[in-house]
Length: 494
Image 1 (cartoon, rainbow, N blue to C red):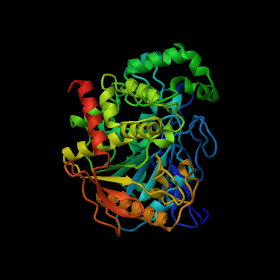
Image 2: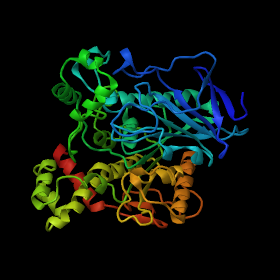
Image 3: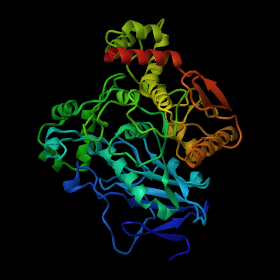
Image 4: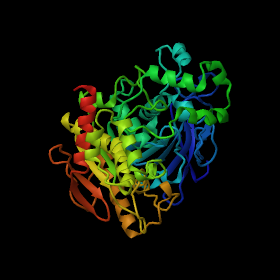
């Protein structure tokens, strides 16, 4: 074997990875954690990966799930693979494991993006794993005919089930890479973070992880029922599943937009994402969290200072009349209360209020809901706010722009085209990386330097802010989030 390669044995067979010449990390890419979901396995739960003979090369990323968004490399339905970065083999204790779930709104995303390279995080003392899951129609098509075929009477949520299968693979195999299968932290952003919030309450994910880091979780919003999702797919795509199964991947990608609204509802359910299938997801997150029906584990959760403007900048909501129509559509019966909390005096106020509404309903509410619920059940909880703007950046930081900081890849292809970075950005990145790895290692996110990160308490609402400096803050968006809590409570009649 070449000196630049390294070999490990997994349950399915031997893998040949590479030793990164710069970081000296051991890197394994494109490792299958499930069988290719093609042919008869399209729109079925993932099946465990098959064993292979000989030594399988693990030197390059696999294809990403087909999608309309640009991704590095190829796209193919045969996409269920993971990637591992591990420090040189240690002689003492196994290392904590950090498993990343990528974002992308459940219709896009890839583990092969350059800013998700795990070498710098792994160098701090962790085994880092990223993986692909099915997205769009491949991952979240609920259809009446598919439900009829299913032994459990459910369909959709295939991408969510992929994440469960990936975590099961990690539990079974990560020791071969120097990782501790009893110290698995799942972390992710956006849709990936929303997936983690669902994992906390899923009966199928019990025992597969030990801690969670949720970055801008799209959690706490109403979920569509299986019947609602089946009806939507039938109306948009037709009732003949046999014909849909014959479509090529490109043809399915072209039809994805038929299942996606042109403008996301702020308080209403979406159907092309995880739904209430009655099997893997059995109740709304808000109900599960409020009722204490979730895994009580150490939790780190937070959001960015400007989660909304990137999304709403192109929305056709520019006048007071359009803004009032938006409130009426999303807060029926509570429009006046919503306007009082998100007031607009004239048209010039509308863009900012709309962005704030999006940020609070889609990400900030879920962040606080998770923090409050986990703390109420006695879990150790830490909350953060990311507010650092790059040099010359006039707004933001936008949704997901903290991700390169967490991975230490500020110079890679940038999330949402963020500007160049400087020494302050490097310092913030170093602080976040140390905190994240410290949390994975000890269950407490205290890195070197900076103030002591206070544990979250619902009475004080304190958090650590990663801005131009690392400081302690409190009460981020408390008043509008209190309104949203009262809205959901009154709408539910409790």
